[in-house]
Image (cartoon, rainbow, N blue to C red; front, side, top):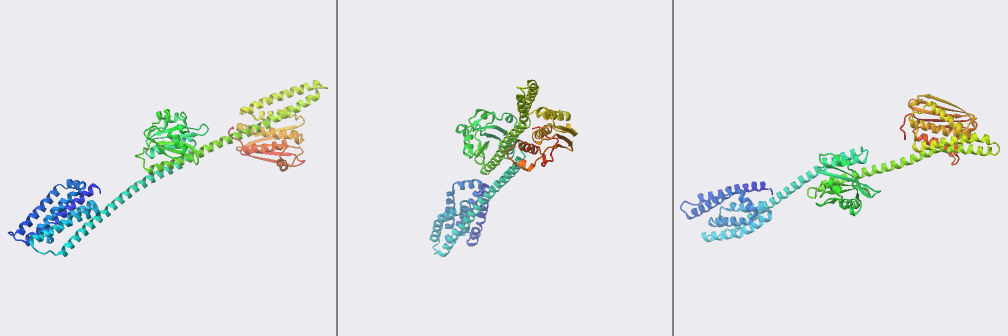
Length: 571
């Protein structure tokens, strides 16, 4: 029971003690005359009770504290009251209500058990007072009244004792409810923080931004003075990428110093590494959380709470906060663990996406290089082989005729060398004009493909300069592949290459009057160089976000229509 409640109850009992003296006062002046012995004994008893009440009224606080620490002092009060009852008639004494006061004191302060003990102690004293009254007056007592009085002692003290016990339980329940309400309020606040953090994590663009968001939430919303997050590098098997933040502070220096400390993800990495490996929270003592001097210098986290960041069975990192064992309630720890789980999921998914993006980029780059080599180098090499084969046949009989052919092969080989260099470095001149586009393709057809009997008409419409470097390069490669197929497989003598740039789109049309083919049958076949070239054009066009339509039939020539965005970034 709180101190203030003790004082109020004690004052109420003192007031009851004064009111219970009214029956003895009336009894003395009404029953006895001034000269009788009974009157004098009654006055002595009344004066004694009044003096006792005055002493209790003058020092209530001291008596309250003393009684709580020394409950046996009630025995002295019970003894005095028993004597007052003995000299005022015993079983007929008017101090019956007065005698209930110490029993109620025992009930309120020491509950049911104290009330029963005090009553059991007082009953023999009461019986002794009754016998003393009988001896003094010579009257035979009414033992039924005595029994009723004894039952009254137990009944009243027991009732007040049980009520005090219920009040104590009610007060304890109220305190528990208040504490639970505070915990629920704190948990609700933590859930709001967790919800806001979860929503903001979805907008994070990189791992470091995720760290900063979590550190801000932990130090600002959760009230932790300092927090640190390290990330697991699975390739080196270390914890690195450390980032720390102090409450109401700036990331600043910690951000600049990230990735400089590497904590081995082994038992030698200390309690932080152990927490990540075992997947459970650990509470550090006053010793540093890690054995790394750099971390101990820049992030003084002695005696911190270590929370592992794991995505399923995969360790992602570790979070250390300065939540000491004494001031970290269970609700706050559960909230930090929930934040750690959400952070681990976000980091794990982000790392997985980045890894897959890198793998996809590598695969796409490999496919692009393979396509560029196929579209330029392999075709040029095919032309060189064709030229050298003709030169070898001319050498025995016509060596003078073979020399120009070899010189042309040399020029083609030099062009192939430049093309390989351009492919390796992925260099394409952004300043290529429409005239250069048509001229290069014409030289490619005549010099590399040896298409002397093929007449090619070039028509470029619209603003060719609006095409991005990637769009120009892609259209050039597709046109190269289409001309190669026309020269070697179409047996055509006329072809046209048209580029139309308008409304943010670029349309490339390549037509010939060759022997044609069935596109569905050709694309369904697994072998054949020309078929690979057609699929290559389609795949390149799809990678640009465009469409590739092939129209052809046997004996009716072929038309290829490419439609791509005019402006795109260079990859």
